[in-house]
Length: 612
Ligand code: FAD
View 1 (spheres, rainbow, N blue to C red):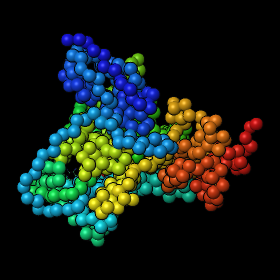
View 2 (view 1 turned 90 degrees about the horizontal axis):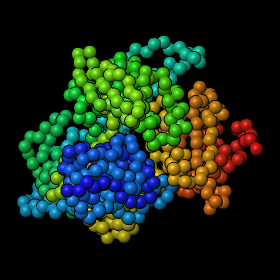
View 3 (view 1 turned 60 degrees about the vertical axis):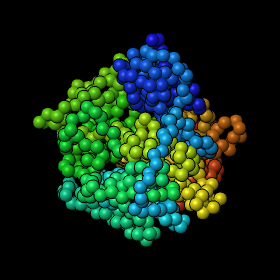
View 4 (view 1 turned 45 degrees about the vertical axis):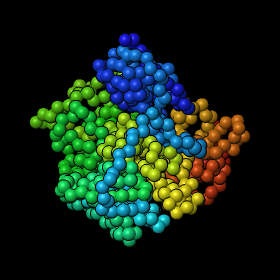
C-alpha cells in the first residue's frame, strides 16, 4: 500500500475555486471515481473525484480553502489506478459570453435501466416529475405545443418550493416588513404613525392567502390546458415508466394506492430541499426556511446559520418584527456572489438589525437547553478566533439546498445522478438518457425559479420538436448568457453578469460606471438615497473604447425590479452609448442605469465633472 497525494486535476478555465463541501473524512474507504470534495467557482460547482481507491489518511483542505490544479486534496493509502476526469456539474453559462455548446462532463457512471413488464394505468407523451416552477412551466409549454402531458406532484398543490415555501411566501412577508420599515422612517420626515401593533396570526393568514391565490391559479391553468395532475410520490421503474404512490394530507402520507404511468418522454423537475446540519438538535426552535416561514412566533434572539440570500431575507422579516439577529458565515463576507461595493452599502444600512456578524466562522455543535439552543462556534480558518457559545430562541439553518436526485430511483430509468444528487444535462436539458430531460434546481446552480422556468421551456420545446418533427423547436437550447440574482432585503441587492472582483480574478480589464443615488432626484424624493448603480464594460484593447456591458448591479429600493434591464443589455451586447442614449423616464430609479452608463462613457451631467 502506497501513500498517494490526490490532487485537483485540470479544471478547465477555472484558476482557483473554493472548497464548499467535504464529502469524505480521515478513515473513510473510497473507491476510484468517488467524489471527495465539491468546489465552486462563480460559474459552476464541481465534484473532484478520487483517482485511486484506498483509505483516507489525511485531509489537506478545509471548507473555504481556495484550490487549483495540482493542489493536494488528501492523502490516500491505496493502490495506483488510472487518473480520472473531473465531474463538472452543469455549468452555468459563462458570464457575458455564449453558453458552452457541449454537454457537461460527468464521471458518474451511467446505470443500466430496468425493464418494466407490467401494465400502465396512464399513458402520455410527456411525463413531468415535480410541480414546481420548472415542472409546471414545462408541462404547460408542452401542452400548449399540443402534447398530452401528465404532471406528478407529491404535495396537494402545484407550485413547488417557490410558490408554497419559497419565493412567494417570503416576499409576502418581506413586503410587510418593508412597509413597516418605511412607515418607521416616515417619522424622520415628519409623519409619525406610532408603534405598529402586529397580529401575527393575521399576518400568517395573509401569507397563506397569497399562496392559495397563486397555487389555485396554477391548478386552474393546468385544467384549462388539459394537463393531467397525478398526486403522489413518483419513482422510476423503467426507462419509460414511472410508478406513483398516492399521497394524501398536507404532508406526504402514502395510502398504499399505486399507479404506473407510461411515457414517451420525461422531464425530471424534482427540485431541492434545505440542507440540515447533522449535529443540530431535533427541536422546534431549530428551523429551516420552511419552518421560519411558518412564523409561529417572533423570538428575542435569533441566529441565522449562513449569510446567503435566503437567510438574510428571513432575518429581515424577523428583525423588523422585533428579533435581534446574529449571523454566522464561513466565508469572508455576506451575500457571496454579489459585488462587494453593493454588499458594503447593504451591510451599513442593516447594521442596526444585528448584534453579531460572525464571518470566517463555522458552527460546530449545538444543544437544546430549556432556555434556548446553545450554539458553539469555531474559526473557519487556522489562527482565527470565534465567539463563545451563545444561546438563541430560534436558529434558522440557511446553509444551502441539496438536490432531490437520489430519491427518484432514477437509475431504474438509466439516468445518472451525481454523488450530491444532481442530474447532469446538456444545453437542451437532456440527461444521459436521450428521451429523459431534467430542469431546475436538480440540474445545478443557481437554484432560482427564473432559471428553472427558462430551462423548462427549452425541454418542452425540444420534446415537442422531436415528437412532431419540427426542426426549429427541436433545436431549442438553454443559452442564456447571464442569470440575475436578487436579495429582496431592505435595501434590495440585485446583480447580473460579471462583478468587479470576478473581472479582476479573470484578468478582464473593465471600465466602471458608478452612479450614486445621492444624485438621483427620485431616490432623494423617496428619502432613500443610499443606493448605487454600478455597470461594468469591457475595456480590453480589442473593444477599442466601445466595450460591451459585462455585468452590473444595484443596491437600493426596488433594485430587483430594475435588474432585468441590465440582463437584457448584456444579452443584446449593448455598450455604454446604447444604454446611456436609451431615454429613461425622469424621475425614476431606473434612470440610474442610463446615468451609470453615461458615467462610464464620460457624458453624465448629473454628477460633478470627472477629475481630469
Ligand atoms: P421545486 O420548486 O423544488 O419543485 C420540485 C417539486 O417536485 C416539489 O413540489 C416537490 O414536492 C416535487 N417532487 C420532488 N420529488 C418528487 C417525487 N419523487 N414525486 C413527486 N413529486 C416530487 N428563487 C427565485 O428565483 N427567487 C426568489 O425570490 C426565491 N426565493 C426563495 C426563498 C426561499 C425561502 C427558498 C427556499 C427558495 C427560494 N428560491 C427563489 C428558489 C426557488 O424556490 C427554486 O429555485 C425553485 O422553486 C426551483 O424550482 P424547481 O421546479 O426546480 O423545484
